[in-house]
Image (cartoon, rainbow, N blue to C red; front, side, top):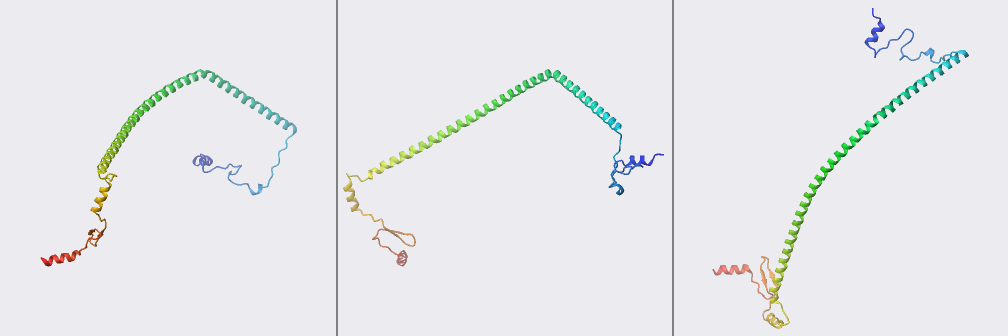
Length: 214
């Protein structure tokens, strides 16, 4: 028959803990009767104390020697591995360096080709822009010249009517003989009546007189 303790340990090892006969579960607090109890320090004889001290010192010495031995062994293995792999590592580094240099040269060639292509496109665009600006400037200059030429021709035509010292007396006689009155009046319908002495006739009365006569 399987003991009860074994069955409990197999079924729920993480949930329950089996307490042995000589001790209580570890989650139980200290018993009230033992809270303030101070255990008595065991008394050993001087010969036993010296023997324990000797054994302890021997143990520490032996463990220190073992640790030093394994440390020196490990350092020897590391140095041998480094010396054996130094040439291989240098060779690998040289190969990796050559590979990186070759890859960098390929990248530089690609970047240079792209830069040259971009420079050609920019140069063509700049030339096109410059030619366009030159054509616009030439067109603007021709328009200015044509406008100035038209203005010069107009002024030449108007110069025939200019008053000069030679025809000053004739211009004065013509102005006195043909006086011009620039005064005018406007009625409510927007009709203009030029001249200061021009008689103003009521249009409604004029229309009524025409109708009666007809």
